[in-house]
Length: 112
Length: 113
Image (cartoon, rainbow over all chains, first blue to last red; front, side):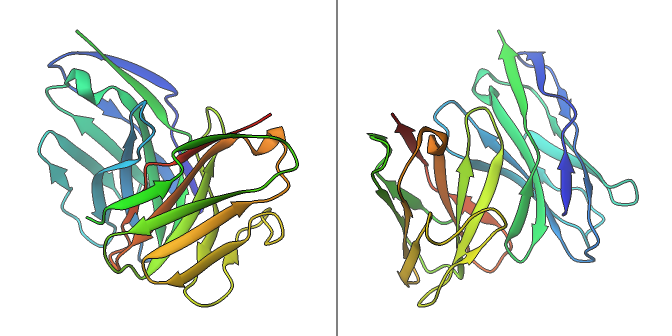
């Protein structure tokens, strides 16, 4: 991706509820990958979920799922049954052949 | 997923000095990368570390300031040279196992006084 945009600098959600983080991107590539990474205060970048652009089926990983709209160049992350440990910065990223572009991040706070 | 370690985890340095950060991957990766994350910002790619040859630098980053080595498939170093307070950042390495998926090390938090 040449650009990745996250329009929500901060979000909050009550524990056990569902939250959706938005991401849009722009690319001229035909084959590319999209990712969501989580960065807790420990600063470790943790891969949350991965989507191949050629796959129409939305990726899911346990409580995490994406809504991939290729024509709209949209790649949102849904977190179900939010847990306190989900509190972190979430970065959307896209690219191919190792050339990853990151969005500016969304700070998610899960409240008890 | 690959397990990636970095040393040191943090350091405080004086301006004008240099710091070398080490990155070790537990399995063979095809590509290794170095990123900078300035305070409160997102990640910016510094360079791709190439085994046995010069690294490929992104626009705005030069070899004299950020020399990188990768003597084998599982080890790389990044040196931050002639440091200034503007170099205070988190530096992260990542590895890619031909799946176009990058796994990150824990990062090195650098403070330059």
